[in-house]
Length: 319
Image 1: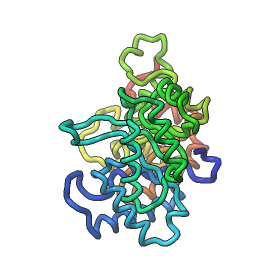
Image 2 (image 1 turned 45 degrees about the horizontal axis):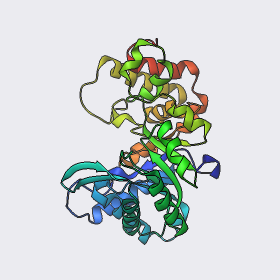
Image 3 (image 1 turned 90 degrees about the vertical axis):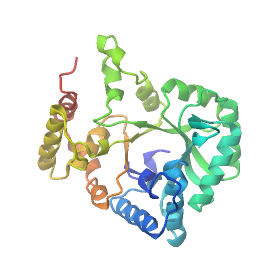
Protein backbone atom coordinates (compact mmCIF):
# COMPACT_ATOMS: atom_id res chain seq x y z
CA UNK A 1 0.00 0.00 0.00
CA UNK A 2 1.29 3.43 -0.86
CA UNK A 3 -0.23 6.85 -0.50
CA UNK A 4 0.43 7.31 -4.19
CA UNK A 5 -2.89 5.58 -4.81
CA UNK A 6 -4.69 8.79 -4.03
CA UNK A 7 -5.98 8.17 -0.52
CA UNK A 8 -5.28 10.68 2.22
CA UNK A 9 -2.75 9.92 4.93
CA UNK A 10 -5.20 9.94 7.84
CA UNK A 11 -6.68 6.57 8.86
CA UNK A 12 -9.78 5.95 10.94
CA UNK A 13 -9.28 3.38 13.71
CA UNK A 14 -12.47 1.46 14.52
CA UNK A 15 -11.51 0.11 17.97
CA UNK A 16 -14.12 2.30 19.71
CA UNK A 17 -17.09 1.03 17.70
CA UNK A 18 -19.50 -1.69 18.74
CA UNK A 19 -20.29 -0.95 22.38
CA UNK A 20 -18.64 -2.32 25.54
CA UNK A 21 -15.78 -4.83 25.71
CA UNK A 22 -18.01 -7.60 27.02
CA UNK A 23 -20.40 -10.27 25.85
CA UNK A 24 -23.37 -7.96 25.34
CA UNK A 25 -24.74 -7.72 21.83
CA UNK A 26 -24.82 -4.54 19.78
CA UNK A 27 -27.95 -2.79 18.64
CA UNK A 28 -29.27 0.05 16.50
CA UNK A 29 -27.48 2.69 18.59
CA UNK A 30 -24.07 1.12 17.97
CA UNK A 31 -24.77 0.76 14.24
CA UNK A 32 -25.87 4.39 14.04
CA UNK A 33 -22.72 5.46 15.87
CA UNK A 34 -20.59 3.57 13.35
CA UNK A 35 -22.43 5.24 10.48
CA UNK A 36 -21.95 8.69 12.02
CA UNK A 37 -18.21 8.33 12.54
CA UNK A 38 -17.76 6.85 9.07
CA UNK A 39 -19.55 9.85 7.60
CA UNK A 40 -17.40 12.24 9.64
CA UNK A 41 -14.22 10.46 8.61
CA UNK A 42 -15.12 10.46 4.94
CA UNK A 43 -16.06 14.11 5.29
CA UNK A 44 -12.41 15.02 5.94
CA UNK A 45 -11.05 12.75 3.23
CA UNK A 46 -10.38 9.55 5.19
CA UNK A 47 -10.87 6.43 3.09
CA UNK A 48 -8.85 3.79 5.02
CA UNK A 49 -10.68 2.16 7.95
CA UNK A 50 -8.63 0.07 10.37
CA UNK A 51 -10.02 -2.94 12.28
CA UNK A 52 -8.85 -5.97 14.24
CA UNK A 53 -10.66 -9.22 14.92
CA UNK A 54 -10.43 -8.64 18.68
CA UNK A 55 -11.80 -5.08 18.82
CA UNK A 56 -14.81 -5.09 21.15
CA UNK A 57 -14.69 -8.89 20.85
CA UNK A 58 -15.59 -8.73 17.18
CA UNK A 59 -18.38 -6.18 17.55
CA UNK A 60 -16.37 -3.36 15.93
CA UNK A 61 -16.19 -5.34 12.70
CA UNK A 62 -19.81 -6.44 13.02
CA UNK A 63 -21.34 -2.96 13.32
CA UNK A 64 -19.12 -1.75 10.50
CA UNK A 65 -20.38 -4.62 8.39
CA UNK A 66 -23.96 -3.63 9.16
CA UNK A 67 -23.28 -0.14 7.81
CA UNK A 68 -21.64 -1.53 4.68
CA UNK A 69 -24.63 -3.81 4.10
CA UNK A 70 -27.12 -0.96 4.20
CA UNK A 71 -25.01 1.55 2.24
CA UNK A 72 -24.96 0.56 -1.43
CA UNK A 73 -21.63 1.28 -3.12
CA UNK A 74 -19.82 2.25 0.10
CA UNK A 75 -17.50 -0.77 0.10
CA UNK A 76 -16.03 0.25 -3.26
CA UNK A 77 -15.30 3.76 -1.97
CA UNK A 78 -13.18 2.75 1.02
CA UNK A 79 -10.05 0.79 1.85
CA UNK A 80 -10.64 -1.83 4.52
CA UNK A 81 -7.91 -3.14 6.80
CA UNK A 82 -8.07 -5.65 9.64
CA UNK A 83 -5.67 -7.57 11.88
CA UNK A 84 -5.30 -11.03 13.33
CA UNK A 85 -2.82 -12.70 15.67
CA UNK A 86 -4.04 -11.90 19.20
CA UNK A 87 -6.29 -14.26 21.16
CA UNK A 88 -8.15 -12.96 24.21
CA UNK A 89 -9.60 -15.21 26.90
CA UNK A 90 -9.07 -18.43 24.96
CA UNK A 91 -7.54 -21.80 25.89
CA UNK A 92 -7.32 -20.88 29.54
CA UNK A 93 -5.14 -17.84 28.88
CA UNK A 94 -6.00 -14.17 29.30
CA UNK A 95 -3.94 -13.19 26.26
CA UNK A 96 -1.67 -14.99 23.85
CA UNK A 97 -0.46 -14.59 20.27
CA UNK A 98 -1.19 -16.97 17.42
CA UNK A 99 0.15 -16.60 13.88
CA UNK A 100 -0.17 -20.26 12.99
CA UNK A 101 -1.46 -21.11 9.54
CA UNK A 102 -4.75 -22.42 10.91
CA UNK A 103 -5.33 -19.37 13.09
CA UNK A 104 -4.69 -16.87 10.30
CA UNK A 105 -7.10 -18.62 7.95
CA UNK A 106 -9.75 -19.05 10.65
CA UNK A 107 -9.62 -15.49 11.93
CA UNK A 108 -9.62 -13.84 8.52
CA UNK A 109 -12.66 -15.82 7.41
CA UNK A 110 -14.45 -14.85 10.61
CA UNK A 111 -13.59 -11.18 10.05
CA UNK A 112 -14.93 -11.29 6.51
CA UNK A 113 -18.25 -12.65 7.76
CA UNK A 114 -18.56 -9.92 10.38
CA UNK A 115 -17.55 -7.20 7.93
CA UNK A 116 -19.99 -8.58 5.33
CA UNK A 117 -17.42 -8.33 2.56
CA UNK A 118 -15.61 -10.78 0.30
CA UNK A 119 -12.15 -9.31 0.88
CA UNK A 120 -10.04 -6.94 2.91
CA UNK A 121 -7.64 -4.63 1.13
CA UNK A 122 -4.95 -5.10 3.79
CA UNK A 123 -4.37 -7.74 6.45
CA UNK A 124 -2.04 -6.83 9.32
CA UNK A 125 -0.38 -9.41 11.56
CA UNK A 126 -1.25 -7.84 14.90
CA UNK A 127 1.62 -8.83 17.21
CA UNK A 128 4.84 -10.85 16.89
CA UNK A 129 4.27 -14.47 17.87
CA UNK A 130 7.40 -16.12 19.36
CA UNK A 131 6.12 -19.48 18.06
CA UNK A 132 5.57 -18.16 14.53
CA UNK A 133 6.87 -20.23 11.63
CA UNK A 134 7.37 -17.75 8.79
CA UNK A 135 6.72 -20.49 6.23
CA UNK A 136 3.30 -21.15 7.76
CA UNK A 137 2.48 -17.46 7.58
CA UNK A 138 3.57 -17.34 3.96
CA UNK A 139 1.41 -20.37 3.16
CA UNK A 140 -1.67 -18.91 4.84
CA UNK A 141 -1.24 -15.49 3.25
CA UNK A 142 -0.61 -17.05 -0.15
CA UNK A 143 -3.84 -19.05 0.11
CA UNK A 144 -5.89 -16.02 1.20
CA UNK A 145 -4.52 -13.95 -1.67
CA UNK A 146 -5.14 -16.73 -4.18
CA UNK A 147 -8.73 -16.90 -2.96
CA UNK A 148 -9.09 -13.12 -3.34
CA UNK A 149 -9.79 -12.61 0.35
CA UNK A 150 -6.70 -10.48 1.09
CA UNK A 151 -5.06 -8.07 -1.33
CA UNK A 152 -2.04 -6.77 0.61
CA UNK A 153 -0.14 -7.72 3.77
CA UNK A 154 1.19 -5.61 6.59
CA UNK A 155 2.28 -6.01 10.20
CA UNK A 156 1.79 -4.26 13.51
CA UNK A 157 4.16 -3.78 16.44
CA UNK A 158 7.12 -5.33 14.64
CA UNK A 159 10.75 -4.24 14.48
CA UNK A 160 12.71 -3.81 11.29
CA UNK A 161 14.57 -7.06 11.97
CA UNK A 162 11.33 -8.99 12.47
CA UNK A 163 9.88 -7.59 9.25
CA UNK A 164 13.04 -8.51 7.31
CA UNK A 165 12.91 -12.07 8.70
CA UNK A 166 9.26 -12.49 7.75
CA UNK A 167 9.70 -10.88 4.35
CA UNK A 168 12.30 -13.50 3.40
CA UNK A 169 9.58 -16.18 3.50
CA UNK A 170 6.88 -14.18 1.70
CA UNK A 171 6.16 -13.78 -1.98
CA UNK A 172 4.19 -10.58 -1.38
CA UNK A 173 5.72 -7.36 -0.02
CA UNK A 174 4.93 -6.12 3.47
CA UNK A 175 3.33 -2.74 2.86
CA UNK A 176 2.61 -1.31 6.33
CA UNK A 177 3.77 -1.42 9.95
CA UNK A 178 1.40 -0.05 12.59
CA UNK A 179 3.11 1.21 15.75
CA UNK A 180 2.16 3.36 18.73
CA UNK A 181 3.55 6.79 17.86
CA UNK A 182 2.57 10.17 19.27
CA UNK A 183 3.79 13.08 21.35
CA UNK A 184 2.83 11.03 24.40
CA UNK A 185 4.66 7.91 23.16
CA UNK A 186 7.77 9.27 21.45
CA UNK A 187 10.38 6.57 22.13
CA UNK A 188 10.40 5.95 18.37
CA UNK A 189 12.06 9.37 18.13
CA UNK A 190 14.32 9.04 21.16
CA UNK A 191 15.70 5.81 19.70
CA UNK A 192 17.01 7.75 16.70
CA UNK A 193 19.03 10.29 18.70
CA UNK A 194 20.16 8.41 21.80
CA UNK A 195 22.52 5.96 20.12
CA UNK A 196 25.86 6.09 21.95
CA UNK A 197 24.23 8.03 24.78
CA UNK A 198 23.68 6.94 28.42
CA UNK A 199 19.97 7.63 28.12
CA UNK A 200 19.65 4.98 25.44
CA UNK A 201 19.21 2.20 28.00
CA UNK A 202 15.86 3.62 29.09
CA UNK A 203 14.12 3.13 25.73
CA UNK A 204 12.89 -0.20 24.38
CA UNK A 205 11.99 0.90 20.85
CA UNK A 206 14.28 -1.08 18.52
CA UNK A 207 16.87 0.99 16.70
CA UNK A 208 16.58 1.02 12.94
CA UNK A 209 12.87 0.22 12.65
CA UNK A 210 11.90 3.60 11.20
CA UNK A 211 14.86 3.56 8.88
CA UNK A 212 14.08 0.04 7.68
CA UNK A 213 10.47 0.92 6.90
CA UNK A 214 11.46 4.13 5.16
CA UNK A 215 14.09 2.48 2.98
CA UNK A 216 11.76 -0.39 1.99
CA UNK A 217 8.67 1.70 1.22
CA UNK A 218 6.70 0.37 4.18
CA UNK A 219 3.99 2.75 5.36
CA UNK A 220 4.24 3.65 9.05
CA UNK A 221 0.80 3.85 10.63
CA UNK A 222 0.62 5.52 14.05
CA UNK A 223 -2.00 4.28 16.51
CA UNK A 224 -2.58 6.31 19.67
CA UNK A 225 -1.67 9.34 17.56
CA UNK A 226 -4.00 11.73 19.42
CA UNK A 227 -2.49 10.77 22.79
CA UNK A 228 -5.94 9.85 24.14
CA UNK A 229 -6.90 13.53 24.10
CA UNK A 230 -4.39 14.37 26.82
CA UNK A 231 -3.10 17.54 25.13
CA UNK A 232 -6.28 18.69 23.38
CA UNK A 233 -8.73 18.86 26.27
CA UNK A 234 -10.64 15.68 25.48
CA UNK A 235 -9.30 13.79 28.50
CA UNK A 236 -10.01 15.11 31.98
CA UNK A 237 -7.61 14.82 34.87
CA UNK A 238 -4.49 16.46 36.20
CA UNK A 239 -1.68 17.15 33.77
CA UNK A 240 1.99 17.40 34.60
CA UNK A 241 3.79 20.68 34.04
CA UNK A 242 5.24 19.38 30.77
CA UNK A 243 1.81 18.16 29.61
CA UNK A 244 0.17 21.47 30.48
CA UNK A 245 2.90 23.34 28.64
CA UNK A 246 2.41 21.08 25.62
CA UNK A 247 -1.35 21.68 25.61
CA UNK A 248 -0.75 25.42 25.76
CA UNK A 249 1.75 25.27 22.92
CA UNK A 250 -0.68 23.30 20.77
CA UNK A 251 -3.32 25.97 21.37
CA UNK A 252 -0.85 28.69 20.42
CA UNK A 253 0.24 26.89 17.27
CA UNK A 254 -3.38 26.26 16.34
CA UNK A 255 -3.88 30.03 16.44
CA UNK A 256 -0.79 30.61 14.32
CA UNK A 257 -1.93 28.12 11.68
CA UNK A 258 -5.61 29.01 11.89
CA UNK A 259 -6.74 25.54 12.83
CA UNK A 260 -7.39 23.20 15.79
CA UNK A 261 -4.99 21.68 18.35
CA UNK A 262 -5.96 18.23 16.99
CA UNK A 263 -4.73 19.12 13.52
CA UNK A 264 -1.46 20.49 14.91
CA UNK A 265 -0.95 17.37 17.03
CA UNK A 266 -1.31 15.08 14.01
CA UNK A 267 0.70 17.44 11.81
CA UNK A 268 3.64 16.99 14.18
CA UNK A 269 3.66 13.28 13.31
CA UNK A 270 3.08 13.87 9.61
CA UNK A 271 5.97 16.34 9.40
CA UNK A 272 8.44 13.49 9.92
CA UNK A 273 10.09 12.37 6.64
CA UNK A 274 8.84 8.81 7.25
CA UNK A 275 5.47 10.11 6.00
CA UNK A 276 3.66 8.71 9.02
CA UNK A 277 -0.07 8.03 8.62
CA UNK A 278 -1.88 8.80 11.91
CA UNK A 279 -4.73 6.55 13.02
CA UNK A 280 -7.60 8.64 14.43
CA UNK A 281 -9.55 6.60 16.97
CA UNK A 282 -12.04 8.98 18.56
CA UNK A 283 -15.75 8.19 18.18
CA UNK A 284 -16.68 11.87 18.55
CA UNK A 285 -17.55 13.20 15.06
CA UNK A 286 -16.57 16.74 16.08
CA UNK A 287 -13.09 15.61 17.09
CA UNK A 288 -12.74 13.70 13.83
CA UNK A 289 -13.63 16.86 11.92
CA UNK A 290 -11.09 18.79 14.00
CA UNK A 291 -8.33 16.72 12.37
CA UNK A 292 -9.15 17.97 8.86
CA UNK A 293 -6.21 20.37 8.47
CA UNK A 294 -3.43 18.04 9.65
CA UNK A 295 -1.81 17.48 6.26
CA UNK A 296 -1.85 21.17 5.38
CA UNK A 297 -0.37 22.16 8.76
CA UNK A 298 2.37 19.54 8.36
CA UNK A 299 3.52 21.26 5.17
CA UNK A 300 3.69 24.66 6.89
CA UNK A 301 5.05 23.60 10.30
CA UNK A 302 8.55 24.97 10.84
CA UNK A 303 11.48 22.99 12.19
CA UNK A 304 11.46 25.24 15.27
CA UNK A 305 7.77 24.50 15.92
CA UNK A 306 8.32 20.76 15.48
CA UNK A 307 11.30 20.62 17.82
CA UNK A 308 9.56 22.99 20.21
CA UNK A 309 6.70 20.54 20.73
CA UNK A 310 9.07 17.61 21.20
CA UNK A 311 11.26 19.32 23.78
CA UNK A 312 8.24 20.77 25.59
CA UNK A 313 6.57 17.39 26.04
CA UNK A 314 9.90 15.90 27.17
CA UNK A 315 10.20 18.61 29.78
CA UNK A 316 13.89 18.91 28.92
CA UNK A 317 16.28 19.70 26.12
CA UNK A 318 17.55 17.01 23.80
CA UNK A 319 20.95 15.47 24.63
